[in-house]
Length: 348
Ligand code: SAM
Ligand code: FES
Image (cartoon, rainbow, N blue to C red; front, top):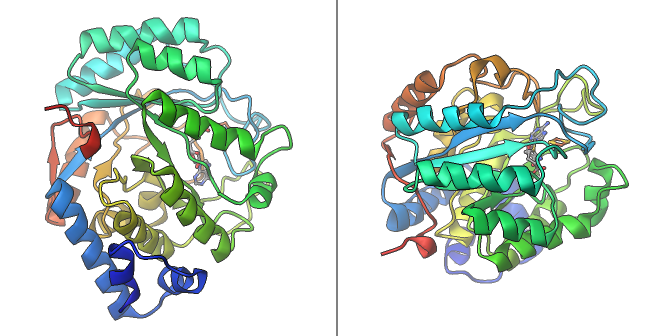
């Protein structure tokens, strides 16, 4: 039996078999992998592509991840944080444009305590009861995650970055703990969030064995969302001279993840669109079913620079959504106005 079929049937794959799928240069095998991933995503979500309105509400961060352009050591980053009013305005304009999920993403900014976030979350949900709210604000304690969930947050994105402890430690300063990051993901699951993890593809020091560990970790955690994108260097980080991660490997991993977790919400990420002008379209054709246009005010867009040459930093939200809708249509799919929940979370 070929490896794609084995994966789709949820059979155990040896490390060597995963490696062959991930690194394959066999065009026929790669096309078959992508075709099965599309078939599986269509059997669960049809041709629908879900929109997430990304609001990058603060670029202050206490962390110092070596790959990240807004790490605290980057003294050249111009720091900003949006006011509650500005965040609510982003949601308002996003709602009018058809977004039904808002993603509040930011650095780990101590300013945003539970006391500040709880009323903000409640107000967003009061104004937009038909929308889902996703948080992506890093590691917190379980009690805090619980408070934010009780206030109305539905989903949480926290990439695990790499499932290999040693590799994790080479990408992060010593005060950051691999165990804590993984614990956060299990805490979020236990509380009842739709949980997203994910890894950077081609981060410095990454070997194919690390990616296989990532895949086994996904099988164990069973996340509702998986965000992956190629590593892209940022000029003011210690990894400024490292190479961008492979788009082809990212695409094959999207297909593999779709086959392993058929119902997963899988974004075609901005990093993929930055590394390759058609990266997001290719991502959708590899089995992705989510896109995340930017809803942040244009005057802060270029300050949330995680990596160099990030796309869409100059466009208004309306322009981003128009552009994404056309790109998605061109490859035969359809952007829909919906919360776009994981199919296990759809309320009847
Ligand atoms: N602070 C939150 C957290 O840690 O989850 C959310 C913001 S963080 C900037 C979002 C994600 O950006 C990270 O999880 C990481 O995977 C990704 N990222 C950061 N720098 C990157 C780079 N140079 N290339 C690709 N992805 C990067
Ligand atoms: Fe905190 Fe990147 S180091 S968001």
